[in-house]
Image (cartoon, rainbow, N blue to C red; front, side, top):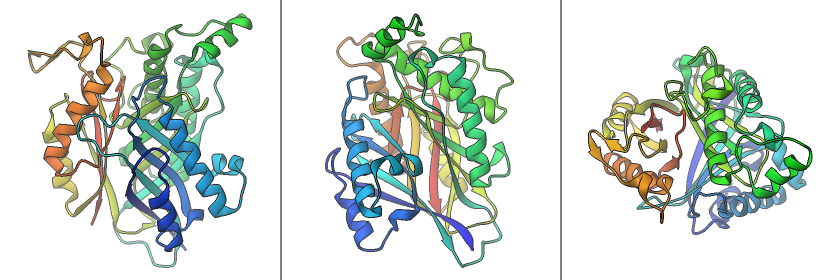
Length: 354
């Protein structure tokens, strides 16, 4: 038997909308037992109080638990669910369903899309954004790489992570134990968690030699070219999905990536498309407002807007740029690219059918 990765891209009518996935399961288009990861975009604000992520996650867990006749706790063990809030501009809410199947057909001569999943232990509030999160993430990425059978870091094209954040309740709980958190600002905790997780990826893949705690959200020279991290209130551990190409996998899907040097670098997407050829199945990218306050020498005001946070502006800008280059708005664009690509830029990965 040979492993095969399948990817379904399903539009949603709201965070609670699992009907497209339920229909696919009922029609036999996907076997619920084969689902190992779900990555999606919801129309929430993407901030600390974005409860659409948890709402969507719960709806998916309920559907899968019913389909598999198992308790919710079992779904948490077998499926990594990464929901990213924020579909600003023209971004279209959707789900990417990743399936790992066993097939009898032989593997082709060339590498095909491979997927590995990893989970860290739950983090204490005082560990978020610090060395423990970096180190645990690096270890889990290494295990996920092995799970996918990917030969080495050069064959990894995207590492998607859902990571936790701090709430006032979590900060106070740590304080009652005499522990101090990395920050007492809940929104900043999202950046610290994303940044520490991304440095964990870079460390695991050998992109950097070391990842000191004091570098988190400070030393922008340290980054991963394939990490994509998204923080949410709905979990306390890191859930990791490693995507790459590997021999020994069947199917007709491959993945490629590049790095956007800034928010308007559409050429990065065009380079990936040119290398892949064939039909575009899914697009995953990171976005952030340049911390210098400029894009190619022109001043931007995303960091000065007190009404709309910069991550929301960045998703809209990058979403528009990529939609124009690719010709589709059903794109996974996640905001907040701390240590994910160069400052002001971010990785972009495309899954294509050959």
